[in-house]
Length: 213
Image (tube, rainbow, N blue to C red):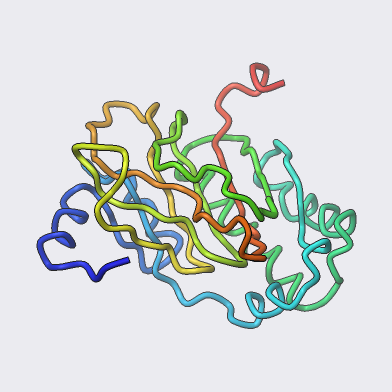
């Protein structure tokens, strides 16, 4: 991966990458022309280091649809089922995910979210793409973060940026209303065969609960 020159940096910003200092600032995704909102917060290092030390088979795993005000309770159950140790770091992880879910639900004006906590060891979603969804929040809590880049002429960006571990990112999908083509694509990092385990949170808005059921 090469260093970005100023021209490339400007092209990426011009393509619609908004920078948020807090998770509340992720609302920048609603600004005209903003295709990606990246939160450059200081993550809880204790939580990240705890997850890094944790046996991979004890990382939280789940796929559920529920209202934001039930996420904290659901995460307690998810961690219990996943045999995630009950400790201060677990409580702080649950608190962080709950806050992200509330902010994202308010941002998307939805009463329900699809929450996925995945443990990834393969090259799933390794091709650069735009999700067929309105918007999606991703936050990698262990391992390499989501990668994104700017491409107009083809499927592969010339320069690839990696979201820092612990930093949430919101990406507009192809179903976002009146979205011009931004040229910003993303993918999961190719890690198959490296021995790396990624723990990633995925939040999607659910606007039609009956359809999802």
